[in-house]
Length: 249
Ligand code: NAD
Image 1 (cartoon, protein in one colour):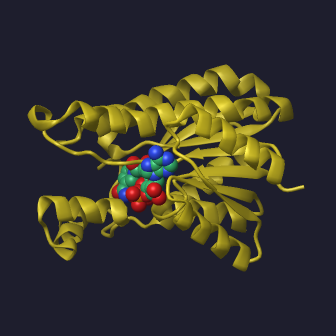
Image 2 (cartoon, helix red, strand yellow; image 1 turned 120 degrees about the vertical axis):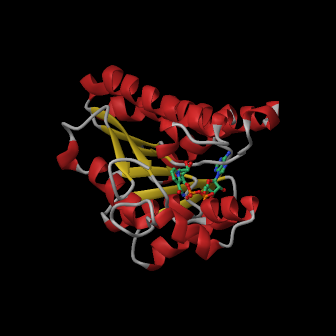
């Protein structure tokens, strides 16, 4: 029987590419997203390609919704033993303009979301004696102007990951973080729009600072997650892999 994966924020962007990649690797994939319609589109694409998938609408920052989502996945696909904490939002602002809500929203989705899903799914992993948790960090964890909230959350996910690796290792569970640099998605397009820079110019500027000389694609991140989730990656745990076309942003 195939292993069962949950990818949060799988409706579009990096999450959608990761869901499709894990399905192509042979896993049954539950696509969780706040937006049930886009989650359904990803699940449909997986099924059309011959894979197994369901779409689940849920807010990762809501404890009751997370519990219900994981119960539904276990009932419909089987116990989930792979978790990709990918759902994310931006509420960028310089510190003096950052509202309480900007702070709370980003902490809620990235940190509480990863905490709630990891806590809920770990019992299935421990029961199975095998599991993989991959959380999306970012080069912004190293500090980024206008992102005091996001940088804090993404750095927090690195500490969270290392702690899960220590606590869950004895149960055959690994925990790692992937920290992308500039990846062309709706999220980065929204950033370009917010700062009033034409998308092509925004990409050109980003690429000028990337050693491999191109923008990142959602598939670049998906391929890295695929490795960390694979059977052969069982001795890699507590690590942060930067997927940024160079050593850092
Ligand atoms: P995106 O905005 O294109 O997609 C994010 C998805 O998460 C959306 O489908 C959205 O509906 C979903 N989502 C948001 N809040 C949610 C919630 N509360 N519950 C459930 N789902 C929710 O973003 P992306 O660019 O694909 O980024 C994916 C992840 O990678 C995020 O964690 C992001 O912070 C991280 N990341 C992205 C980049 C980049 O350059 N794009 C770089 C570093 C890290």
